[in-house]
Amino acid sequence: MRFLIACVVLFLVPNWSWATWSIIIIDPKTGAIGMAGASCTYNCSGIGQLIPGQGAIIVQAMSNADARRKGVEMIQAGHTPQAIIQALRSPVFTPEEQQYAVVTLNHLAQPSTYTGSATNSYTGALTMKGVSIQGNTLASQDVLAAVMQAVVKGQNENLPIEEILMLALEAGSTAGGDRRCGEQRASCAFIRMAKPTDKRGRPTLFLEFFGQQRSGRNAVHLLRGKYEKWKARHRV
Image (cartoon, rainbow, N blue to C red; front, side, top):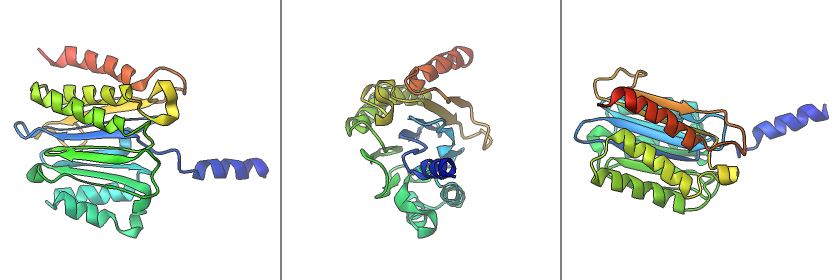
């Protein structure tokens, strides 16, 4: 009985956040939408949804699936990111345990985020036109700043959106990543990109690495290996 109670308590402890640092980017020239994330958890690729040609949403920290579904419905209905975030702050979605980010193609200049008061420090978000960067359980505020710097640099160099996402993940890792992982920085990571003509659920690019043991190799570095193989097959 004591063992069962201990297991239940461990399951309920909120420090198993589904994601730590993540990025949404929309390319206004091509309409491509991308997202990426990394964490010191088993798997974080389910935190977000892309709706090709429309937008993307991330619901991380405790990653409420109902909130994510509601956000997708509202993106498809053409609501603004601010209206979507406001709806997801309803108590039914336990918003103080969530971290939200919404970016849409029709409202590029108005990405919107919300970070609940019960998320784990360091936590925060940065946005600019067509871009949202958010994180919780970070090593420091430097992680978000490093990710944004990588995004801006990549855009200034006219890099493909998928390359910018990969560089942004690496920048977050170099800056400290998930504080729970120490020098490992992340035990799972993913990258996803959809063109406007892609069908929902079948993006042009979806790569992930998950299940890496603690104190093992950095999942962001492992994801880079998968990405380079994908790039060799799909880029001239």
